[in-house]
Image (cartoon, rainbow, N blue to C red; front, side, top):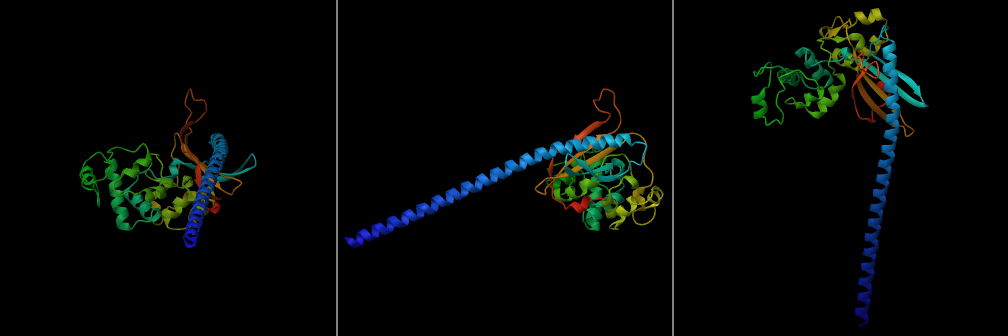
Amino acid sequence: MACSKRRSKGAALILVLWLVASLSLVVMASARGVRQQTQRAALDLERMRSETVLDAVIQLAVQRVMSEKTADSGYRIQRLSLGGNEVWVEITPSGGLVDVNVASEALMQALFQRAGGLTSGEAAILASRVRDFIDPDDTPGGVGGAELAQYRAAGWPAKPRNAALDDLSELRSVLGMTSELYEIIAPHLGINGQQRIETGSAPPALIDALSGQPGLGARIHNSSPEMRAAALQTGAAADFFSPTRAGGGQTVRVKAFVRTEGDRWWQREAWVDLSERPGNLTPWTMLSLEPTRRFNKPEQEFKP
């Protein structure tokens, strides 16, 4: 009998210990959940505060561009002071980017290979497929081109557009285009109707990638206007760049960056048409405004 009582007490003790352990796990999980929710709420609040600053920076930057229309209005990146916040703004005229609607296959191949990291053969195939995605015919062209029949055979969820792109994100639908590759090349893309890239408007990273010379873009932008115009007229990338800027209305991409107290960076991007239009509340037209998002790259990557 005594032995039976001891076994019962032992079993009861084990049950209590298991119960305590289970409750502890529940409490720990609940506490972790509360911490995560608190962190998410704090991050959302930080994003909203940053967005207010970034919107003001974008408006200020566009105002400055409008006032400097007669000055050298090429690519620039600069630091601003706004309400005690550390802010950077990058302004890129659309003429300094690659327009896949009219770019040569050689330029697209160079972009996919030198910036996107594809092999020469992969880049040639993808360039052909981008051209087929846009052109109005149904005949595959170039090396590894693809029209509707090839999309269906591959079980691809999209089909060729057979028209010029209005939204460059449609490149994601090209047969063989990956999300990773698109994210890499997207900062180098713009719609401008120009086959060549304006040297003075091109971001340094694009110049470096297409020329294969790291640091060349920064050296060009830090040189005199005369030296800048003469740059990239020879060498492997000579066919991709133009020393002159096209006339007419100008569209610019504005990227604003702000650093918060937690040493986190936030970014917002806008496309702006600087052409004046009757009836607008502002002298420019906001074409698109991307959501505010975290910017995880080190500061030196966008420092002047």
